[in-house]
Structures are given as C-alpha cells and as structure tokens.
Length: 189
Image (cartoon, rainbow, N blue to C red; front, side):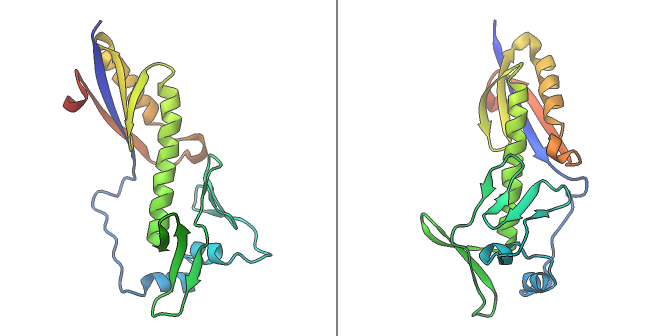
C-alpha cells in the first residue's frame, strides 16, 4: 500500500488583513497609548501594585494578565523575568533578563509573542484531533504533515482541513482557516 504525504497549513486570520497596513504617526505613538491607558500591560508587569487584581487582555477573555506574566488558555505563562521600566531617556523602554543577557521589549513584540503562543496552542489542539485518525509525521511552525494511504488522500485531506478549520473552545470567534495539498513526497506539496 503506497502512502502519500498531506500538508496542511493552519492560518489564524481575519477577513480584512490582506490589504491591512499599520501606520504609526510618530515615534511617540506607543508612549501616547500608554499615557491614555490603552497599552499598560508592560507597565503593569514591570511594577505590579499590591492591590491590583489580575485582568483579562483582549476581547476573547482567554488571556489573563497577573503579576507573574500573561496566562495563556492552556495555563502556560508568557513571562519576562526581571522586567524593568526605564523612563530616563527620550522614550520609555522596557527590558527583561534572558539567558543571553538583557533584552529590550515593546508592545509590538509582546503582541507577536502572544499571537505565536496562541497559534501554537491552536495547532497543538488540532494535532491531537487529527492524530485520532491520521498520523502526523512533521510539524513546521503552523503546518502539519500527515501520511495516509494514497487511495484515501482526498478523504484524509478533507478530514484534516475540516478539523483544522474549527476554532478552539476558548476562542470560538477566532477567525481560523487552513489550506492543504497532497503529494507523493513532502517537497511536492
């Protein structure tokens, strides 16, 4: 029985991102957001007040900000050890300690960390569901590669794409979709 490779790419998207651009009016734009109270996660994490309660981040209420960091839907945390705020220069800067030394951090990099973590959680949950019927043999970032019998390639592709097009229970309104293909080898997908 000849096997075939099926490549499925998971995509966390929204309907208006194709032509979307982000415009930052000036170098102080992020500082203005912080002053207005729209971007206060880094400020909170760098000096969590004793009386401050944890709070939800985002409309889906799947992220919780507390004094330890940002709690993800699966219970794991995004942490920035030793996060400090430095307002001594022209711009407010945030830095945390890593194994490689001090790392600068800003709101956009926190958003990137959150998006990557959520995408990994989503694809991890999808892999568990897919593996009940087909064997995943490789994952690359947001892609799953499975092996299925050649005569069941279309059925397998349909099942995997259907499975990977459903948002997780903790984020039912997340715009999740995927695309896929099959071939005799991974390079041809």
